[in-house]
Length: 104
Image (cartoon, rainbow, N blue to C red; front, top):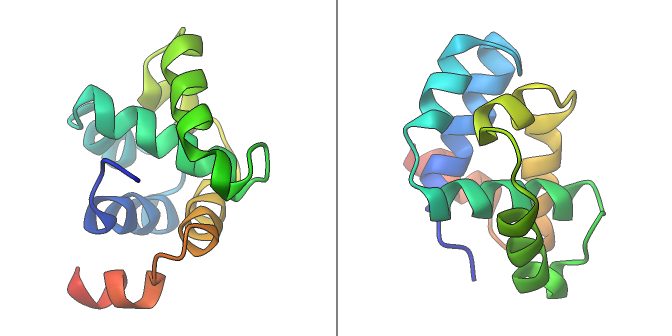
């Protein structure tokens, strides 16, 4: 189970698409998330880019927590396709992206 709201994930997707993955808008928003939310965001991105399978979410979160060597906002801001990876990760986990977007 993800420990970050779908609304926050969609907000990251929108900021990434609107301003780019290396924008200060995006990095400022991600830096304001708590540590669990950041770990979940990284794990979700990894699932979206197929580094982990959806059923391995807990393993992805544990790996994200253990391997964090740089601030999450710096790590994620360097990833081209971040918005698509997050959206694909949500789809893989069965989270309705359109419904989450409507609530934003």
